[in-house]
Length: 249
Image 1 (cartoon, rainbow, N blue to C red):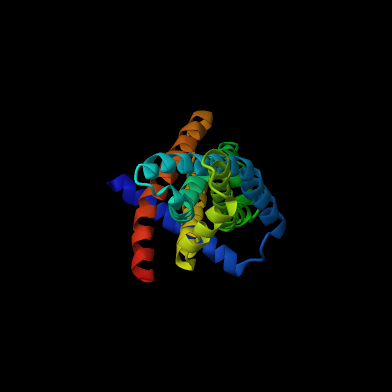
Image 2 (cartoon, one colour):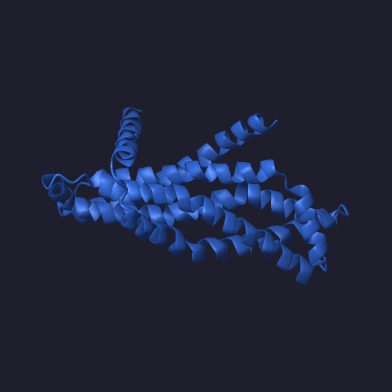
C-alpha cells in the first residue's frame, strides 16, 4: 500500500512539473511534431488493423447470437455502439499503451542510465520541459484522433462482413448505425481517450525517468509501464463510463 501511494505521489509531482513547464516556457514545437509522428502516425497501422478485424469478428458473433431471435438486422446497431462507446477507445488505448508506453520508458530509461538526464540538468535544461511535455502532449492529443479513425474502420469492418457474409446491404447497415449512434455516444467514447492518453504518457515518462540498475532496470521499467498502463486504462474505463452515463442522463 505504501508503494502505491508513493507512485501516485510521483505521478502527481511529475504532472505538476509538466503543467508548469507547459504554461511558463516556450513550447518545443519541433519536439512536439516529432512525437506526434512517433506516437500518432506510427501507431496507425496496428490500431487500424485491430479495429478492422474487431468489427468483423463482432459482426460475425452478433449474427450467430441474433439470428436465433430473428434480429440479425440489428447487427449495425450492436457493432456501432460497441465499437464507438467501448471497444474503439479501450483497444486503441491498450495497443498504444503497449507500443508507445514501452518505447517512451525504454528511451528515457536509457537516457537515465547513461546520465544524459543529469547532463541536461547540469546545463540548466529541464528534462521535463524537453522530454516529458512533448511526449505527454502527443499522447493526449494523438489518442483521440487514433480512436476516431479506429472506430470508423471498426464500423467499416462490420459493414464489410455484413455485406459479404450476411447479405445485408451496405445502405441498410449504415442507416442502422446512424440511427443507433447519438452524439452522447460519440462524445463519451472520445472523451475517455484524453484520460487514457494522459495515463499512458505520465506513467511511461515517470517510469523511464526513475530507472535504476542499468539495462536490466530498463527492462523491468518497460514491463511495469505496460502492465500499469493497461490496468489503469481498464479500471478508469469503468469509472469514466459510470460518470459519463450520469452526466448524459
